[in-house]
Image 1 (cartoon, one colour):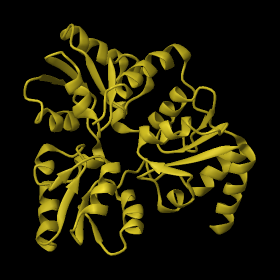
Image 2 (cartoon, helix red, strand yellow):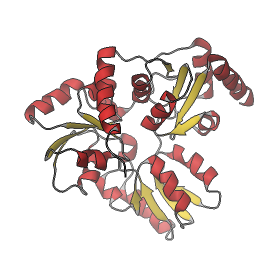
Image 3 (cartoon, rainbow, N blue to C red):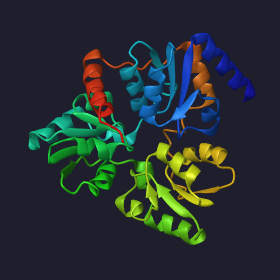
Image 4 (cartoon, rainbow, N blue to C red):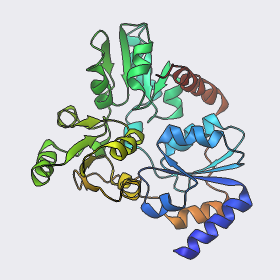
Length: 303
């Protein structure tokens, strides 16, 4: 494995490439990445670099976002078969049909979506900024796509707006049950429970804190709790344990493993750099419209 890592690092330098790894990637992939983080954050950080090549260890829609924000760079996705079931639950045609049923309602689309769906949306959001994005809109009715769970989570804090939800969800987060969480809370009575808002509403209702993966790192770093039950994909445990060696992190359920996020191996990364394939591109007409939805989101004031 050390030899593989050495070859990858040498090729990254030779190709002037930056290696991105999502928080849910395998441990050994996160270990050698230049930047780790959540999906859109990685694309934004990559766009700021002087790299000619982006190697995105994630799933397909993430590499599309990198290509949208960095059209001047070549974006490689070592495993093009690494998809996102939630992103696949919505199509541009389906979204247009829903828009026709609710004329005038703006579409807020979670970044876990294809470039084409983003292009048919008014504004994008992340799990971290979804509440601010929706509150920034003057409209009383909005269409929220494709994650019904995230939509319902933020709707609780925005009672003055009517939400029309696309019926999509993350299968990995959806597999975590109330029973599994309660069992862990019984086993670890002094532990706090944090989870991702992609979880079902009855699960987030049990959480001491629900937030994005990036916010989980901050929460765990500052929390006085010595034991923390984690309700998101298991890959997040790698960095949590490195940053907090004095704390115990317990996965809320063995079901929290995304098969797509675990596809990318060191061998895949090496082959991708050797062959400079597979390249992810977004047609320019779609890229421009999708970027507009992302730019509108980025223009929403932070705190």
